[in-house]
Image (cartoon, rainbow, N blue to C red):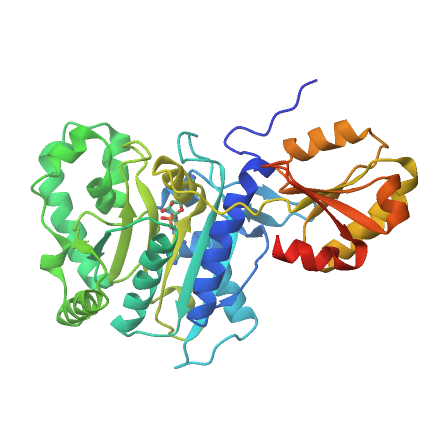
Length: 417
Ligand code: HAM
C-alpha cells in the first residue's frame, strides 16, 4: 500500500525547511522587538470555544471544522484559527489585568476543511499577533505596522486594505440596508443563497462570484453608517498609519470571514495566488471576544499571517531565504584515521561549525563526492600521513585549493578561511 499525505496537507522537506526557519526567525525577532511573548496552544480545543467566537454563521465554523468526539465523549475540534485559543489561554492563566495591555504572538498550524488549491490547504500555518487589553487606535496601528514590517523584512512591499465594521448597532443597521439593496438580486436566487445572505449579508461584499460582485457594485458602504466613536477611532487610525508611513487604502469591501470583529478590519491581498484566493493576511479588532469567553471587557486587536501564502509570494517574487551552508565534511582517508576525524568533527562543532562525517567506511573518493553533493564548503581530511604528522588537510571544494595545517591550528585556520 502506498501512503500519501492527506489531501490538502503537505510535508515540508529539508530542501524547503530552511525557508520556513528563515521566516520564523524574522517573525520571532520582530515580535520580540515589540515586546510580544510567545504562546503555544494545543492542536485541539473544545468545539464550543470556536462556535462562541468565530460564530455559527461563519463558514469556518459551520462548514470547515474538523470536529470529533473523543473517547470520553468530549466535543473537540482541531483549531481552525489561533485567536480564540490564545485568548482562552490568556484568560485561563490570568495573563493580564483589566486596564493592562498584554502582547502575544504565535506560530501555529490550523485546520480547515476547504477545497485545496494554490495557497489553500486543509492544514496550514499562521503567524499571529494578539494585542489584548487596549482600546486605543494606537493598538490597531501597532498591529498593522508590525504586519507590514514583517513583509518588508522578507522583501515584500505590502499595501494594507483597511475598513471599519463599527459596533453591533452599526452592523444591525448596515445589514438591513444591505439586504434591502440586494433584494432585487436575491429575489431570483435559490433558497440556500437567500438564507445565507439573510444570516450574514456582509459576506456578499467579499464574494468572488462575478454575478454577486456586479450585483453589489453600488451597495451602501459601511463607513457611511459608523457611529461617532467608531468614526473617530477609524480616522485616528488612518492618521497613525500615515505617520508610520504604512501604505494603505480604505477598502469598504473588507468584511472578514469570522464573526468576532468590531470596528477596524484589515487585509493584505495579492494577485500572485490566483483570483479566488487572494488574502495574504487578515486581522482586526475584537472588543467583545474576551467578554464572550467570560472575561472582563477587554478590547483587543490582532492579525493572522498565512505562512504558506507568504512563502509562495516570496518564491514568485524570486526572494531568497538565506541558506546556512554545510561548513565541512570531515573525511578519513584511511581506516586508522577514523577516530581522529571523529574527534576533529567534535572540536569543530564545539567551535560552531557544521560538520558531516561518513559513517560507513567509504573510500576517500566517494566521501569527496558526497561532500560535493551536500554542498559542503570544505573537506577536512586526515589520512595516514596527516595522522603521523599531527596535521590536517583542508580543501576548499569550490576551487580545489588545499593546505596542510597542524591539528592545534585547525580551528584558527578555519575561522580565517
Ligand atoms: P483568517 O483571515 O481566517 O484570520 O486567516 C488568516 C490568514 O491565514 C489568511 O489571510 C490566509 O493568509 C491564511 N489562510 C486562511 N485559510 C487558509 C488556508 N485554507 N490555507 C492556507 N492559508 C490560509 C484568522 O484566522 C484570524 N484568527 C486572524 C486574527 C488574529 N484576527 C485577529 N487576530
